[in-house]
Length: 256
Image (tube, rainbow, N blue to C red; front, side, top):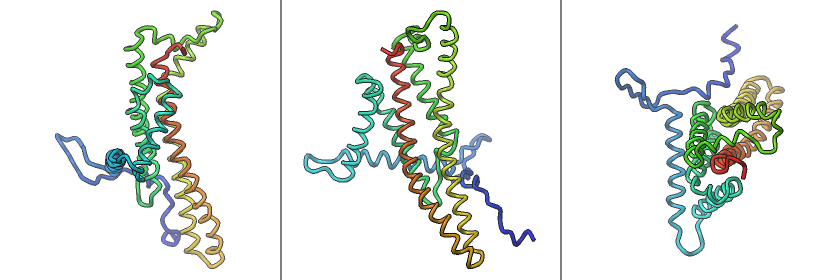
């Protein structure tokens, strides 16, 4: 009987957009969704962390100040190592991207929350922002010399056209790989946790023997949550590091 099997497991349902504040203007839908609300919360938390963390006095720094200083030094060191001292002018961009992605990933792990970075439109918007920044800065700083980025040095002339074609293709594919990497990792991790959680609920509703077996998927959930915490940080780090490397191409298109 269909009524005995219960509702089908739908792990994609957790990523559905739902309007919270309906807003319609001139026939267009500008409603505030759960995704938009979570993005506002993330921006508010990052702003609060830096505003209150920067209020520390000359004495022993408090927890918020220490956290803000650690985040600052971490991103500053990453940017200097990847793009040099000149890359520090892009610190606000890289820092904002890193903190936004990190907090969005972490908040998405909370029960009944929403994972903003599991939506390709969000990660693609961030990746396109980086891509367009690289193109605009590269052309503004170096003019046509920016296209030296596509001509590696010490390449034999007879394979140079092929190498240039590959470099051009890889450059324009960057926004895709940049965005899909973050999106796919967060999507896959949350689907896996949802599926194991559904197994636990189903087994608890079964017989005594199967209830005992439910310990195994429950233990897997705990392990996956710990892994997702690590993935949340690593994906933010990778996204920010790639941003630094791409900005280095804008500043030093010839690799020198």
